[in-house]
Length: 407
Image 1 (cartoon, rainbow, N blue to C red):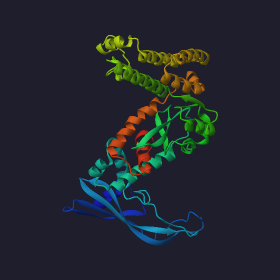
Image 2 (image 1 turned 90 degrees about the horizontal axis):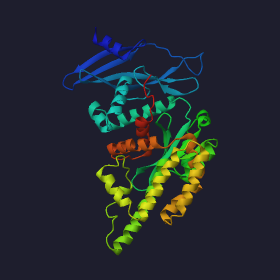
Image 3 (image 1 turned 30 degrees about the horizontal axis):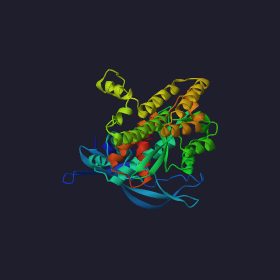
Image 4 (image 1 turned 90 degrees about the vertical axis):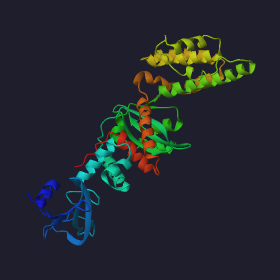
């Protein structure tokens, strides 16, 4: 088989395209394949079936292809610019590459696969000898392609959460599909306007299918959900509730440790993380030590027991039973005379409806919390991001479960 016929076969070329020549340079370790058009080729005018498009000019283009026996392979061609009867001009789409792309379809597909397994974009650049801008452009295009293909399948349970995107108090809002464990989209900031725009990315069909949305008690998220998906129940995330109660216990510990230290020795010295742990094996040395500490007549012990008792709330499947437990627990907690605990109880009472909705829907932002570690790794590998667009593209590329295949 001749070289020209070989590359015609590899590129899947058909009339009016053909390979004119294949030039091999051993010194530069490069193969240049020149592709030409059949003479006097005529194209139809898509704006008027009775007319044909006219050639307005030619562009000399080249594309990076997969290496041939470790030789860099370049495809070269003169591509006509077609002018239609309505005055518009566009470059003819070639069969081996996307319009205006710098790489062939096969090379693009290879880069996408590398990006899925390689921890850094720089690593893909080194493997393929492509510029960072080219590799990044392939990723962005793949994400755009995947977002357009994303089906409007029902998403009954959603999660909305915040994530720090940069140093300081810079946040993004992330929408997740709990049912399929994927990131649907993200927007800068966590304000009401941002939360609304995030929920508006859902199609009307998807909005209708939503039964409940898991979130923390951030007012912007609740208001946006009530405005965009008014029929959906708000379910407050159990992990955020545990975080608030854990923080209250730690505040009680700090206050009591300070008071006891001033009076003499404090048994709470170095016990910060002991109150935050769970002891699955009650016979371990840590569990025995903590049990002895917990049995002391301490305010921290009372705060810890209140926190631990509330975990029973999540086991109820009936709203009435959950409410009776919550009323009894909150009344007991308010009589504890522990101000940090009472502050959290008052907050939980204000959001009682969202807490009780858990008994019906039993969802949480666990998948969103799981994505946080993946997002943190993406940020670390990238050494930060200069703009939100690149940050969004990488999260959707790795966490969106998108169909980014070509063709």
